[in-house]
Image (cartoon, rainbow, N blue to C red; front, top):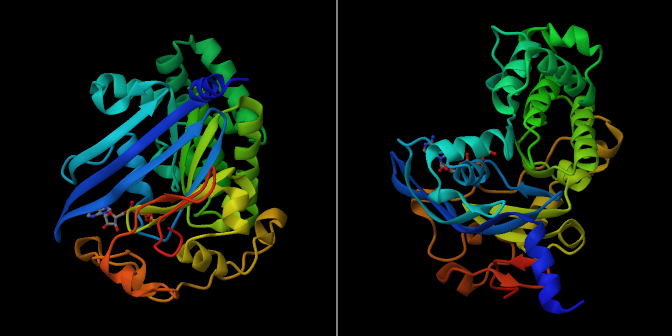
Length: 337
Ligand SMILES: Nc1ncnc2c1ncn2[C@@H]1O[C@H](COP(=O)(O)OP(=O)(O)OP(=O)(O)O)[C@@H](O)[C@H]1O
């Protein structure tokens, strides 16, 4: 096949294309760049994980993609986000709402933020299906029960009539995933979907995401700080630090030959990823020494310089740019540039 045809085929498969995305926030410490020139792509059906410590900008990055940063916080967005061939930042709020409710669906860490305690799970699902899919009450009820069974709810009829606060954390998260699936999205954005759950339930939810991806071809952008989850689910991975992607590549490249000292430190913090495959009790994580820099007072050179075991003079003076180190991998580090 000619190169031009291969490239054309690739473009057809492209679901999300984020280029040089930056988000400036207004904070008590002044303006901070919480997302700093982030670029990545997700193809149809692909699972990508974004990993990084608390405060590295993962949530702000997805909120920027969906144009959902609260207006009192957001100063400006830069860069471009293409989703299914549409430039998101140029769309009207009405069109953007349609995309959020149809093309992309969100699953949050805390299922209760997405569920209304005063309505049953069934009535919330039916409401969505009537509104987004235009289904009649009868069809919406039938589809709701199918969705509850698809996400592995035991006794779907009983769950249909249950209130969220009566369910366990794992069942609530399944209900939220059923709601996300109700609009048949091409992309699910899941922000720490398993963090609040205990290890056995975490494993079940991860297996559910795997099943959904296989059965429906829905792409998943998964935000996590847990490499165990990444190793189990993702095909490709981006590592964030202080607002920037510092390394990205395929899962194999990242786990087998991590190029950035920060990725290596994160991996060294995991005693074993076995728990996520076995559902056994997770071992306590070792922390990387030191803390990420304040975004209001970033160092002049590499953001990781102060904590880096391999730091050299140039790292403290000049900011490294992203450089390609293989066909699919990139790293932001002077020692690899
Ligand atoms: N409400 C806010 N007010 C001021 N600054 C904020 C606010 N939310 C986020 N930020 C800034 O944006 C940065 C990135 O935050 P973000 O929530 O995206 O991190 P995260 O990687 O998702 O962390 P976590 O894993 O804890 O959810 C923070 O370090 C902070 O400087």
